[in-house]
Length: 150
Image 1 (spheres, rainbow, N blue to C red):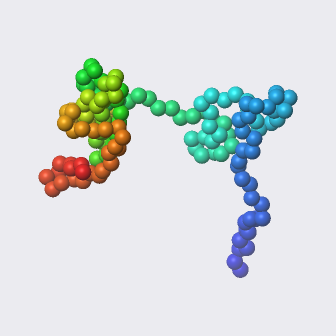
Image 2: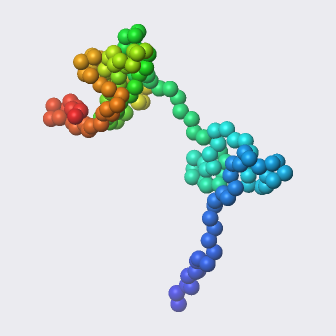
Image 3: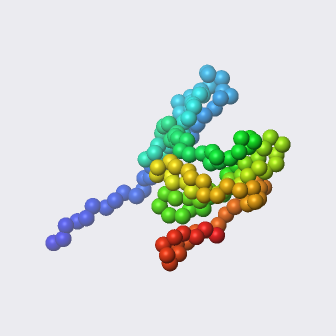
């Protein structure tokens, strides 16, 4: 005789969710359980995915800067686009403007994410980049194992 298999009770469901949240407008006498009035760098889920639990927002660090070798007359730098190559490598397109808003120079560089390193490939005003025209594209590996960006 076969063993009787235990049946799973599916009539009850439990959802882990929050219903109150952050409210800075309530008088303290109206703040109930499940509400909070002051929260800095807080998210309502955990890194593991638990919803309805307060935890610290994940942070990041400044890993690299573009245009370090741009002329001293550059007062504003803009990243216009990034194209993924492989592994941790990205091609970054940027432009530098002077105080009067005129594009002084344009730059293409290689950013290596794992080691937080940015290297200039070419910097020339003749590239004529403009912050109003973002750059997108793709990359592919060529037969000689080099990479082409287009």
